[in-house]
Amino acid sequence: MGDFGAVLEGFASALQPIYLLYALFGVLVGTAVGVLPGIGPAMTVALLLPLTYTLQPTAALIVFAGIYYGGMYGGSTTSILLNTPGESASIVTALEGNKMAKAGRGAAALATAAIGSFVAGTLATVALTLVAPVMADFAVQLGPNDYFALMIVAFVTVGALLGSSVSRGLAALALGLFLGLIGTDTLTGQQRFTFGIPTLTDGIDVVVVAVGVFAVGEALYVASRLRHGPVQVIPVPKGWRSWMNRSDWSRSWRPWLRGTLIGFPIGTIPAGGADVSTFLSYAAEKRIAKRKEEFGNGAIEGVAGPEAANNAAAAGVLVPLLTLGLPTTATAAVMIAAFQSYGIQPGPLLLQNQSGLVWTLVASLYIGNLMLLVLNLPLVGIWVKVLQIPRHYLYAGILVFAALGSYAVNFSPIDLALLLVIGLLGFFMRRHGYPIAPLVVGMILGPMAEEQLRRTLAISQGNLTALVSSPFSVIAYTLLALLLALALWARHRERRANQRVTEGDKEVSPAG
Image (cartoon, rainbow, N blue to C red; front, top):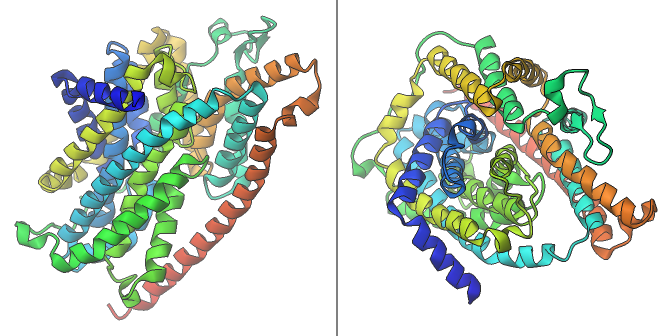
C-alpha cells in the first residue's frame, strides 16, 4: 500500500505544469532525433547532459526519460518511410514497414507502430512499477561479492553480445575500463595513467567521453560517408481513411501483447535491450502467422510485434538501472552519468533515499507515452520534413553543441582536446565495427566494480574464494554461462533469418 501511495505522489508531482512541459520537450526532442538516421537517444542525452545542470534533478531526468522513449518511437518513422533505421532496434521494423509504405500503406504501418508502442510502453511501465520495489528490496541484501558478480555479468554480456564481433565488443569494454581507471586511486592516493597531465588527476569526465564517442564520433563518421542530393522519402497519404482499418486492428492487437511479453523481460537482463527482443518478436510472429506468404512483402504483424517489443524493452532497461545501478544499454549508461552528475547513485537504496524522484520519473513515463501517441499520429508530416534536413547542416550543429557542452563541464580547454581525441577514437571504432556501448558501460561500471572487488577482498583478508562464497554469486556466474550460450544461439538464428530475408529480396527484385 505504501508503494501505491508513493506512485500517487509521483503522479501528483509529474502532473505539475512545469514537469509536463519538461516531459513534452523530452518526447518532442526524442521523437525528432529518433526520426533522424544515426542520431539516437544516447547521443541526444549526452549532448543535453551539460546543458541541464541548471535544472533540478527531477526535471532533468524527466527530460532524459522523454528523450529515451521518444527516440524509440521516432525510429519507426525513418524505418518505414526511408528504409533507414534511426536506431539499431528499428532494423526489424524496416523489413515489413518499408514494404507496406511502398505498397501505399505507410500510414497503416506508422499507426500500428505508434499505437503498439503506446500499448507496450504503458504495460511495461506498469510492470516496472510493480517489479522495481521488489527488486530493490532484494538488492539491499546483496553483499559486495554479489555486486561484483553482477557487474561481471554486465561486463561480459554487454561486451560479448553488442556489436557484430565478440572480440571487438570485449576490446571496446577493455578500453572503457582503462578510461575509467585514469585518475587518482582513492585507496592509495597514487596517480594512474595520467601521463603527467594535471587535469587528468581527477579522471576523465564521463560527459566528455559520452559526447565524444556518440556525438563527435558519429558526426565524423557520417561526414566520411556523406551522400549528396535530397533524401527520398515515401509520401504518407492524407486523411484518416488511410490509417488502420478493422482488419489491421484485428491483426495487430495480439502482436502488441506478445511483443510486450517478449520485450520487457529481455530488457531487464544485461545485453538484452531492444535489439534482441525485436528480432525474437519478429521471428515469433513469422512462425505463428496465418499468412506467412505476406512476410517479406509487408505483413503488418511484422511491424506491430517488433515495435511493441522495442518499447517494452526500453521500460525493462530501467529496472536494473534504477534498482541495481547497472546500465544495460548505451542510453542507460549515459543516464547513469546524469544521475551521478547530481550526486545521486542509482541502486537498491535509491527507492529509499530518493523515493519522490523515482516515482515522479515513473509517473512521467506514463504521461510521456500518452503524449507520444497524441503527437505521433497527427505530426507524421512534420517528421517527414525533419527527415529532409541537409546532413551537413545537422552535423555541424551537433559538433558546435558538443564543443560547448563539453567546455561547460569544467570550463577547461583540456576537455576540448580530450573531446577531439575521444571523438576520433569513436570515429575509428565505428569505421572498423567496434561497438560504442561496451566502452561507455566499462568506463562507468569499472570504478564501481573495482570498489566492490577491493571491499570483498578486504573483508576476506585477500581470500579469492570469497568472490564465489554466496549462493547469489554462484547463481550469477552460472546464469552468465547460460545467458551467453542462449544469446549467441539467438544471434545465430537472427543472422540466418536476416540472410533468408535478404536472399528473398534478391529473388523478388528482378520480377519487381
